[in-house]
Image (tube, rainbow, N blue to C red; front, side):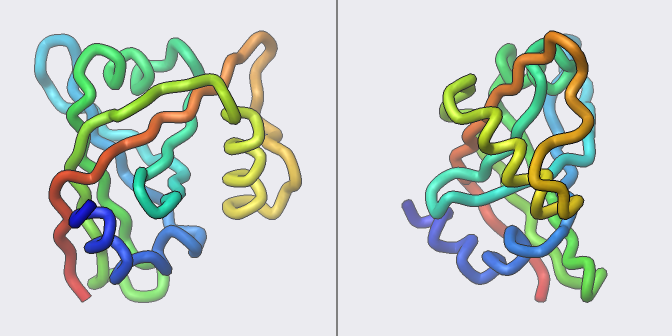
Length: 133
């Protein structure tokens, strides 16, 4: 996968506490942007959310996305990824959100869970990667 290998130049952004901005499409076609925690497994960009949230509904309706990650150590360095959702699954979602919580907050578990919340992992296949720095 050529675009996934293009992300290797920006791999460190996935290891830092760099917030991503995920753009999805609303039912009327208008854009919706949400700051998210993000990971990269070498093939897919990983985003974790709760079932039923706006971004979950948008991703299920239209899997086209754009993600931007800015380097917290150099605001002029960033990567932009355009792609499509390859899979949305509940499998491994609780472990995924705990790993992300540790990376972003230092807590060993996700502390913002709401009662009855079902976590999902969204695997995004990069189709176009560009950036600066």
